[in-house]
Image 1 (tube, rainbow, N blue to C red):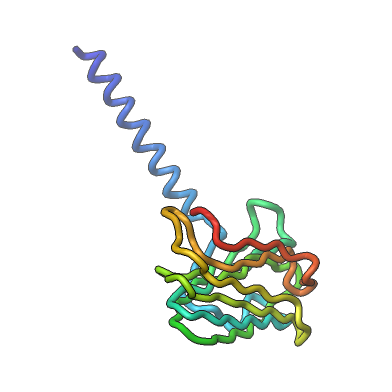
Image 2: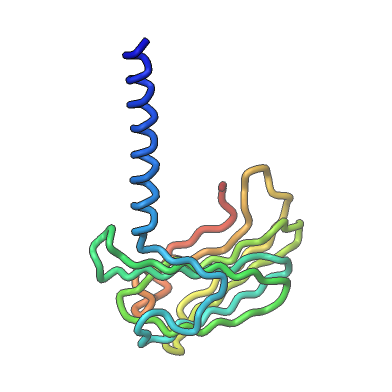
Length: 168
């Protein structure tokens, strides 16, 4: 009986230590999240302009990852801003070697809803994407437009990776 209690105590202690380690590691994260897209990220230096147009409520997100740092040490800023139907513009001052995703997601879209984004860097048109929902979404799918850039300051339409309406 005594050895059974010792084993149970060691198992509980192992779980406590594991949870403590995960909590400490999570607090050490290089990821910061904010609910508004900022006008300036870190030191700034280049102008990223994003225009979004949506016919339904949704969320606009722009992520910023400092690619000049080693993987695992890269500071990252995740932004997510709720929007209603309409046209929105954000201008963000970003430094070199910072890249990430630009994404506009629809919340509960209906057939006929549209999403569109246009992207400029330092006043130069880079890319645009738009989608119209032609049929009801199937379960576990989303309606969105998205672009990825390794470095916003050197972004070009050739570099962008695109996705629209994808499984979650």
